[in-house]
Image 1 (spheres, one colour):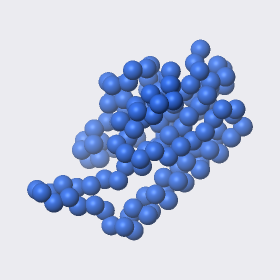
Image 2 (cartoon, helix red, strand yellow; image 1 turned 90 degrees about the vertical axis):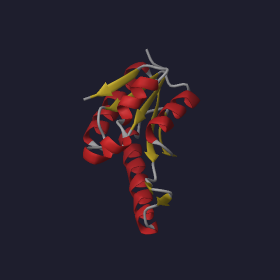
Image 3 (cartoon, one colour; image 1 turned 180 degrees about the horizontal axis):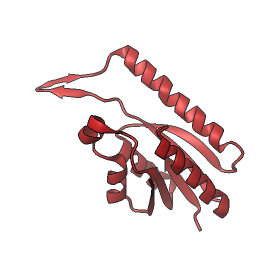
Image 4 (cartoon, one colour; image 1 turned 30 degrees about the vertical axis):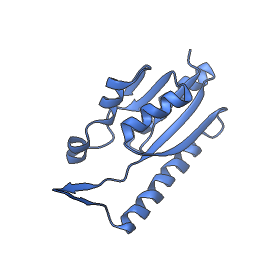
Length: 141
């Protein structure tokens, strides 16, 4: 049914469910499974000033992102043709670009990863992916 499945993974409960469903689908169709987490360094723009987070925050964020990739790799261990990767950039665009690069014929994503103010400011990653994907998207609730 599928040959290449891409899963967006941020460690949230819904991304855990998305990973579980993608593993199931990959197993059923013997598809290649790619799990990605996107490292996004937030910046705040105030007038003409761009404020980046402190270096200590960035280091912790990178360590957290690597821990998520390590966790995802443990989850997919034993599946042939499965790997987890860390991407960098704007989450929705990075997922879409990577899906195109690997020729994914399905993107699996949780309906929400962020909450509250972050989702309002950044927009919903899953919504953006659904609206702009050139391949089917399975949204997990």
